[in-house]
Amino acid sequence: MLYIGPHVSISGSVAFAADRAHELGATGFAIFTKNQRQWKSPALKEEDITAFKAKLEEYGYTKKAILPHAGYLINPASPDPELRAKSIELFQEEASRLEALGLDVINIHPGAFKEGDRTDGIRRCAAALDEVLSAHPSVRIAVENTAGAGTILGSTFEELDMILSEVKASDRVGFTLDTAHLFGSGYNVRDDVNKVLDEFFSRFSPEKLYGMHLNDSKVPLASNKDRHDSIGLGLIGEECFKAIVRRKEVHGIPLILETPDETRWAEEIKMLLSIA
Image 1 (spheres, rainbow, N blue to C red):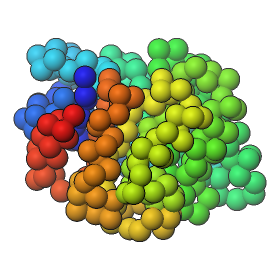
Image 2: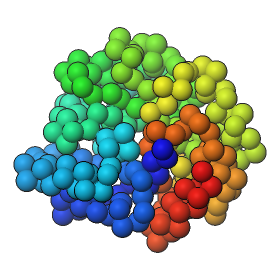
Image 3: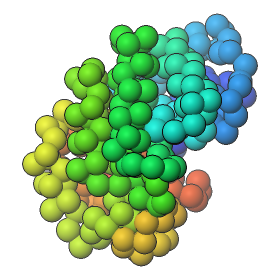
Image 4: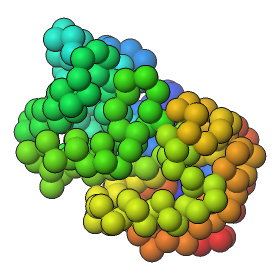
């Protein structure tokens, strides 16, 4: 089964996310469980939780089709004790919201080490993941690869492996591969995405791929920048995405569009599903 859909809004109620995905013909989707740019948000209402679960059942969405994304303020690799503590507290809150909604995987950026040694940042990131996993035994974490700007961690498969190796509960940690981030960090998914995926699977088992973000790129290969474009309109091109959906390893995990033009989402979903 291919779970393809966009990152949909929860505006008004988290329950509306499933409506919005269904209207687009999506077989899967992503959400934020709260405002992604605020430290504090109101608690989820019980009626919204109940309605969300009912909508999933109505439309036939299982938790395997949904990839929630943690907020952008979270920096588990931060060397600042106060910011790191706030990040872990917020991550804990988001994990609790995840559990309340009956979901079990949350996508997280590995963060930036800001100063000092990269290895220390990797250790701080891994320790933060362990702290959240210890408090939430039903939750799994998908660490997202990055484009590699500045001191941001996770731009290479080697570095993702280093994070995983430092996590004690590594059986509950996997990855989300973002195509625009791969391209930005120097992995040439435009010319040979199968080679890139083969390299990933030579290091990690297929079970470690928890999801993918399917995004074209407005910026060149190895730019270390993260600028998404609509499928087929950017510098990666449509062939990359056609090849991805034909890979057996991506069946059964969420393939999420974070493309910028919402008016093209239904078309992108239909095209990718028809190819597969």
